[in-house]
Image (tube, helix red, strand yellow):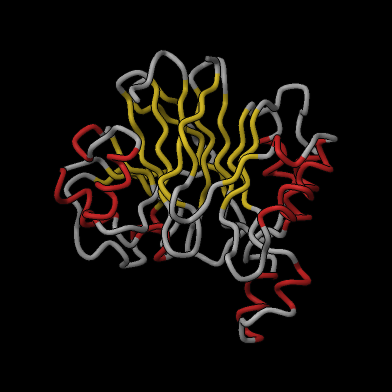
Length: 261
């Protein structure tokens, strides 16, 4: 599928084994994160009708391997501009220098061709993590994963998004009774870890729900969450049915969706 004059978005995979999100508007195609090998990314891009040569730029949220592992090789091979914070750049996770890196300053918006990008600071255990809001002048898509808590700063920036790719990583009871060692459980549940279903639901309750048209639960833990439980918890905060909440999974991500179409 090729993007029209509307903002389109798809996930190529979402979870601890690798993440990548593709956002397009006209001929502009932005890849957010790449936790996959170049070969695997090419396979996943082909599934949604794209190739690496079609990409305009790559943006990185933070340096954890499931988000950055394949970024260095990708931007070197295809000579792609790479947007990242200074903290992410100095993390040493790019496997060497890249041909064209561009500094992100959190809370300072910038344009990449037809898409406006707002990088938003989030609480996560990385050097200088950000998440992104992307817009076409009329609509805003919020990408919000890999954060341990919701802050007033985040609510202020995201509350008027029309679409939201939102982390619902774990259920606290399943996490507490799950297979992770105590130190990892503490990290996941901490203020710099990952959002629980209920934290995500509490955030949705603070959104401008009159504008919110699309919610995709993402970055679900395969060991500490349940898809139906996540959907039900998020749906309750929006007074809707669980099937209205879409899901992003590890293998398939989610199919193309659009704002303004």
